[in-house]
Image 1 (cartoon, rainbow, N blue to C red):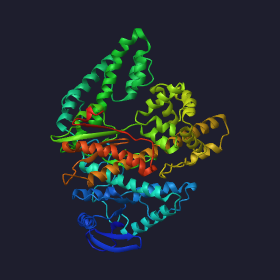
Image 2 (cartoon, rainbow, N blue to C red):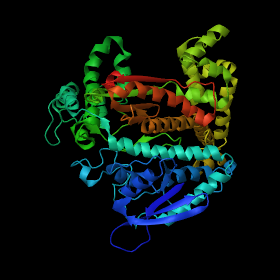
Image 3 (cartoon, rainbow, N blue to C red):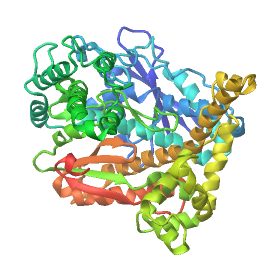
Image 4 (cartoon, rainbow, N blue to C red):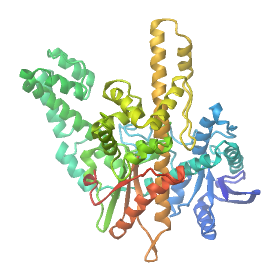
Length: 590
């Protein structure tokens, strides 16, 4: 049963919301209530229907879930119309999908501040756009004037359900929309709960690396010390070391033949002439040290700590399915790239523990099951997949007889390597796993022609731009031909990987959904488990809960990995192993 939630078409000074029931026989009951009573309404309905699946359909979980979570309410299931619309719109753009869908209301532009701008209460003086911003509007910031009404959302829900029903693979598409919506719930819950983050430890890291917290806009002591040394080495007293352009200009003015300030280029230049190595490193080392400290200071310094960590909890914002492949992104706090320097601050409190899980070689395993390549499935059974391939290579006399070669070859197959070691090893991999390589090559061929491909559940890749097709049609000069071929090959690499990476993203969110479901429903000694998901990065997750629940939580994580695969593909002989580490310190889990 679906219950649509949205603003009501009712007069009055207070925001009023409406709940409309939609079941197999059509829309039923209507309830109108003050917006502030939304949490109590959701709680009452869920409590009254403990054995019934209720999918709360709303425009955007980012505008609804914060209010619910603040009141201690977290629905079991939802249908996020915005996320579903994004998937269906792209799917309808591919003729082969035969998906008759046209949105009845545009949900892609959520109300609230523009992306990249922090709400006023979170801005730091002089740094309004330093951090990523929040993915959605502030809780309660939307109004009846900016949000579609419940009746409009009901019409959109019907259009979406109708499109799924008549699609060529309705069960798969329905699973995709359900998983994406569960992802919206998980993202909201993780942001609300926050990741354990010890402020005292973080401050000690900053003081050790940077020195005492500077006043105003001054540089930290260690950065200023390095800046002075760089100026002295280059004979440039007015140099601003934060400006790559100024640094490069000063290097060249000092007679050094460098063309970039990138780390790898400076390192290569410093090592290029053996008898000058020591002298060059005397210059390069402070430059690289300064860049490292500058990254720490700007990305995870004291201002970041003040903004994103409250009561020893880091509250990042996740954007579900932000990439074309369905991978998540971070739009606040930088959760998708937590540097090693600050990981020791991710620390469990007394009596609590972190359960960190990492899926092993998920994309190659997805390739094995999607392609039905039994040889690849066998290679990863009970062992590291790359090692399994190397063992097969050793038995068959193939050059793919060590793990490193196997890894390079398989990654090359999934990402379109045509040159270098990956390209050289491709014929051997194709001979060993013909079905798997054929799948990637079919997807690549579609992309080369400007076509679109789909994941296993039905997420569709975007079509190339109008400019792409113009470039393919207008090949007048040799330069035009080279540009067109380059663009075609780039899109070919994209579609080659899309089918695998996109399906892996589907597996990951279903994995988390299964974990969430079991953590919510299982009992230990008659009591609900307290362990919850608090972090996600592509194929890595973190749970946080009491020490006494850690063993069971680890079991749930491992079991849910295989269950997720079977929900997508049905019974499969491909294994989806997960490495689980229980620790009180995140830096020890990596």
